[in-house]
Image (cartoon, rainbow, N blue to C red; front, side, top):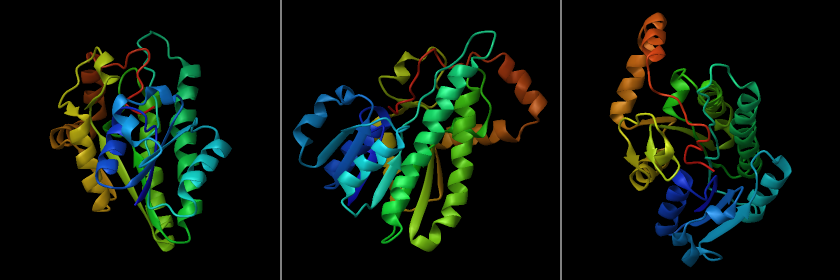
Length: 254
């Protein structure tokens, strides 16, 4: 298969790229800084792996990179790029929120648009990496939670709209994944999972063409509990929570 992954130079993105390369597929990745690529990528460069230094908010440049890799045929496109810059201050930072929304939503739409334009003739699969944070509002992460929630709903709609073109849409909502970036977190990270193990789980969900995959199971159950409880109780509990993203946390994307 020909597979393209945005935010594929580190974290979940690279774990997925490495997994698919080892499975014998042609993989393209993009990121804002190719220097983030790990040493493990070097044996594959120019062979099974193609790399593009692109910001996903640059619609034209991203489209050009994906089209250059695809050459008219793309089997799988994973929209993984995203950021979160937490806010522990007493006043919300609206400028920061706009930056998060631009990258997480505009970047996602630019990615799916590029994939749709290629896949609408022969079909394929579009995947978005959302988060369990998309199901609840977490303190210090309003824009991040909002952007991930928007991804969940947009993908649900796209899964219906794109079906007639032979395009499957899958949304992945992981919990905390162990990456160099998440290791900077000061808050608790329950049910933390190794990135390589996460990549295997994600790839299985993709191959089964699941519309939505939430993992790990214990995190899924916790999120369901938090989502269903009375909102007044939820707000009370979270007001005492130590959870808040640090000042610059890029969530294992790029």
